Length: 98
Image (tube, rainbow, N blue to C red; front, top):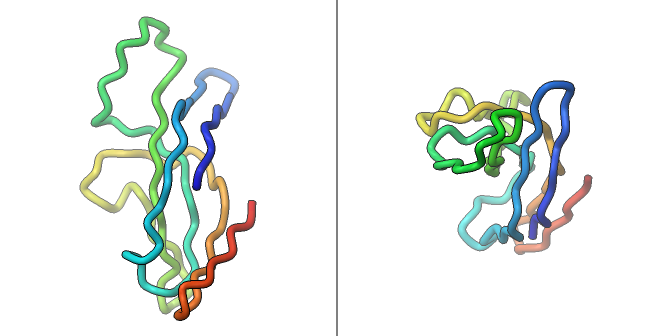
């Protein structure tokens, strides 16, 4: 579960207003980063241009030790911050660390 959050920077803030759940049974065992992203597909009706809707991206750690990057996928988003790291074991056990 990812709780609602707000990330505030010097000129821009990002908010994710609802709780989100990640279905772990659909994910291969491994290490992941839960990343807040600026999602350009979400319609944001807020008239304040310094506030944006944040989305979530689950980035896998690759076999070579590098991490997937949100910007390299065709979802039109930009990474804002790493929220947590998720370790998912083959038996379904999960550990989420901030």
